Image (tube, rainbow, N blue to C red):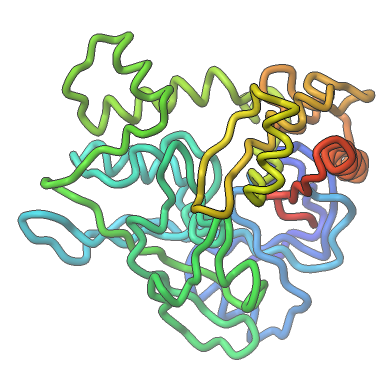
Length: 336
C-alpha cells in the first residue's frame, strides 16, 4: 500500500476538476484496505470511477481508490450463471464481457461510465432497465470495524438512483465485489424505450440479439451525451422528478408538449432535461462551464472550470425549474 500525498484528483473525476486530498491510496486488494484500517487513517472517502461526483473543494480526507479487479463465474446451470466482478472493474468493460459470452441482462446499461462498485450504490439505470434487475449480492467491508458483510438484493433497498449505500449506511462500507445473475437463454429483451426500437428498425433488424440492443443503446448515448474524455461532465446531473397527477394536469394544460412517463395512478415522471431546456438554459455557458448544447441534463466543464461554479449553476437551474413549473429537481451526482 502506498499513500500518494501530492496527487491531483483531476485525472480521477470525469468533470476534470482539480483538487487535492490528505492522500490518495490505490486499493488493489482487500489486504490494502485492512492495512489502511490498521494504521488508523481517517477520515476516509471512497472513489471509484469518479464519473458521478462533483468535487467542489479540496478534500480533507484520505481517498481510497477502488481498483479491485477480476471477473469470475461462481455458479452456472443451463439457463443462467452467477458471476462475481471486482468492484474496481469498469462497468462498461464488465457489460462487454457479458456480451462476449452471450449473456443477457446488462445490454441496456452499455456505455455507462464508472466502476462496478458504484453501480449498486447508485442503482444505475438506462433505457428501461436498472442494475437491480440482474443484481444478486455484493461483498463489503465496514470501514470502522473491518467486518466483512454480504448485502443481498432486498437488503440494498434499491430505488430510483438510490440504495442503502446513499442513505442509511452512507460512507460506512467499502464494496469489494458485486455479483450478478446473467441469463444464457429464456430471456426477454427490454425494448420499451422508443429510440431502441427506432434504431433497430432503421438497421432492418427484426430479431435483435443482446449485442444488437447494446449497439443501439451505445448509438443513442453517443448521439446525446458528450464524451468525458473530450468535455468534462458526469452524465445526467439531475434525477427525473416524479410529480403528482394533480400538478401534472395543471402543467399539461399549459405545456401540451411536456413528455411524461406514468408511475402509478397518482404519480408521473417528467424528464428533468426537458424542464431545464424549457426554462431556456440548454446550451447556457458561463466562462468555462455550462449546460450542454445537445442535452440539457448534462452540466459540463469545457476546461479550467471549478466545482463550486458548477454547483452554483446547478442551484440556479433548480431555482429556475422550481419557479417555472413548481417542480423540485434533485442531483443524481454526489457532491463532494
